[in-house]
Every structure is written in C-alpha cells, then in structure tokens.
Length: 139
Image (cartoon, rainbow, N blue to C red; front, side):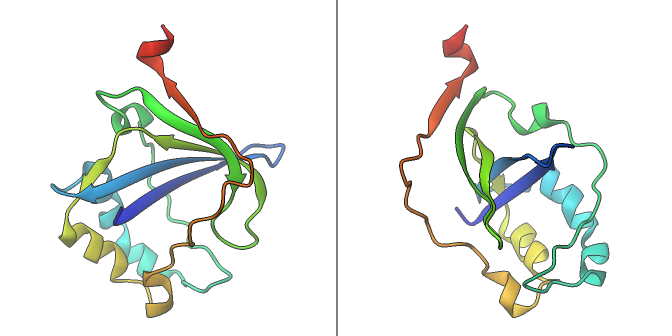
C-alpha cells in the first residue's frame, strides 16, 4: 500500500490502541483532504527521528472511514516507531481507501528526506493471531 494512516489512542491507564487505515491509489480521499489542509502547521513542526508532530484535526467520524464495510482485523502488536512499545491493540479497517498521487505528494512534501520513506519492515508474527471481525457475519 502506498500509504497507511495510524490513528493512535492512549487511555488514562496508558494502554494504547491504533486504528489503521490503508490506502491504494485512486481518487482524492476526503479525510486526507482534511489533513492536507493542515500541512502548513505540520511544516512548522519538527520531523526528527525522536520526535512526533501532533496536529489536531478536530473530530473525525470513524463511521465515515468504514462506510459499506464493517470488517476489520485485530491483533496485539507493537508501535511502529521507537521505542516500539508492545501490547498495542491494532485495528486495521477492512475497507481500503483511495488516495491520489497529488495527495500523497502533498503529505510527503513538508517532510525531510529521512522522514519520507519511514515505513518499518514487515515483522514476523511471533505467535500473534490476527482475528477478522465482520459485523454482518457476527449478527
């Protein structure tokens, strides 16, 4: 996939859950358009290997991310950035969204060269089970 969006959530007990949205090339995506509008702020933040940039997007309706599909995959893994904290609950949406090449270029533009291709290599499953949840099937 050319792009993946992580919505990282941390509870008051410090437990972490991530909603992952996968993208393939196609039409412009409405959520990415919201993010694209915030790129000026992102460009003002630093992009260092040890530092995250936090840009508030406002309210995101997660139902909008998963229209026409109620499937998602879940497993317990780790964060993809150092310190790669374990025991993170990952929820990967079953519907792959589209992103245009222009949108992807705009997302990468404010980043320095070290940050543009920062995907972590595929990790072995280490005994982890990936479960498929399908709301229609479970009813």
